[in-house]
Length: 427
Ligand SMILES: Cc1ncc(COP(=O)(O)O)c(C=O)c1O
Image (cartoon, rainbow, N blue to C red):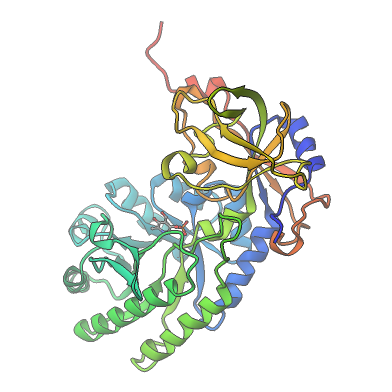
């Protein structure tokens, strides 16, 4: 399937207005994908996707997803504020944080967010700093290795998140004593997996554990939170998760475990990030230098501070050259940024068409954990974000964004004044 690629005309139009680099998002694609997810879980009356704000913490995107029925999953004060700025409160917000300071719990309580406790010790901590809400969620970490068949999918035994099975029991007993009335259960055991069995596997674990806890303590579970983790096909021939199939398999587990236990009224929810916006974003940059030494380098005006994933995870992001999508990939380049770090490479020994200085280079699937992981090393300024408004079909279907959707700058680029704004002690 051809990769969806914004047209060179649209890219030039935006570049002429704001320059490169910038992040571009396909609003129509995000909407259609959110609708597919909602359809896949429509069998559950309480289903809601709490968009993991950390993936793309920009109000225009959060609001767009809210229009599609999504809430927000937040993990910090700033993320809670963002959700509030987008008009959210109460059950629309999950607060799935860890190592949480008092002020964050206090603000989450003020908003009426559903608080997801990462640890048993947090029961007393929360009681002391903000009080115990009537509805509360607990994060489970079953430990060991998380396997599906013979395949190790994750290593919860080494993860800092969540509490053990015994601690869950203790937490429920304590919270009940302190006035909590309804419970939710959450876990996150593998990241970026396109295996359709991931959600059904953790759903079964959560459903069984919730049934046990409910029986042990005589408490109601109002929600099961499958969290994030559904991946996207970053690699050219990787398969896409089949969300309708996943929804159907989770339903089977729900009907097998929850319904016979009289817990069929519980909501099943997700807090996906990557799956919601990842494939619908591109980092758009310009080739500004070429260097031929022991390798052939193309230097961009974007660097790892604009997109960190290749540098820290060695992650693959597909690259196309605007207007040269159909040219043969007969050159081999390292595509780099300008940081004083040798891992500042978007691609290593990648086969690409001949790249000329001034060409627009497009990095794909950067719509989640892209701009949001940006940083200011070497004094690099964070780039702008641009939203292509409605009218764009889901790229997987159209594979062509060459229509004329309007674009809107939803975050301006940082300036040197922004960069220096925090410095107080200078002469
Ligand atoms: C608590 C929590 N929920 C949801 C997510 C979203 O994960 P993903 O973007 O992989 O779906 C994350 C990611 O770090 C997370 O930590």
